[in-house]
Image 1 (cartoon, rainbow, N blue to C red):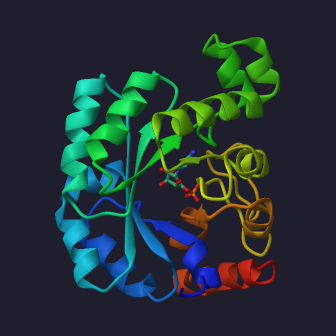
Image 2: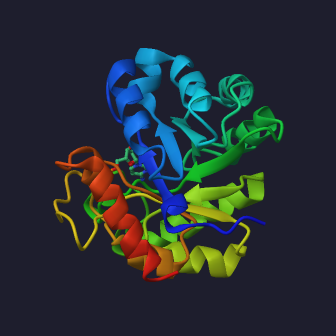
Length: 241
Ligand code: C5P
């Protein structure tokens, strides 16, 4: 088994609008991150071409983060198409229904790992309150995250996406084999600008809590030297491995 290195924990989201820019980041960061994430902005503008390009550039794994949320039949069929692209991970929202989650897993045909998005790290307790969810979920968001993680696990998802705060609880309840991906990461070494993220943790803290992968976007993308920023974050991860 190949040992996971510090950089392998880093998922860099290609949050750019053009294929040209995305290719520049792939070239710049291939050696410094473990996986590239392709999200809605880039997939809508470039389609599967970016997936082919990342593959052509080497063996870096790909996370196609489309956060599906639709009726079960539509999710099933979309997931069948995703399964043909040869990516490692993809996502579906957990909050709607178990049928939607089951359809996502069925459509994946075991050819892509499906992760359930529990509660976005940009969501605050006042958002939960405003959405009319149970008051205890607004006062303790981890309860809602755990409920959604359980739904994902019961439907057969390979893991979940959640903030660094709930990772420990999720690993304890659902086991080490249940993958946890954590966004909302802000390095103690770099800028602590939160942007639109609410529930943020440092790379070291998220790894100590048990995260398998960290999604780290703007702290790398917007750095003066993105390569240096990625290396610096990997060094921080290294200290807790
Ligand atoms: O590090 P930064 O805040 O720039 O990360 C933004 C990225 O994290 C986006 O690609 C967004 O889709 C992703 N994200 C996620 N799940 C969340 C919150 C953000 O995948 N709960």
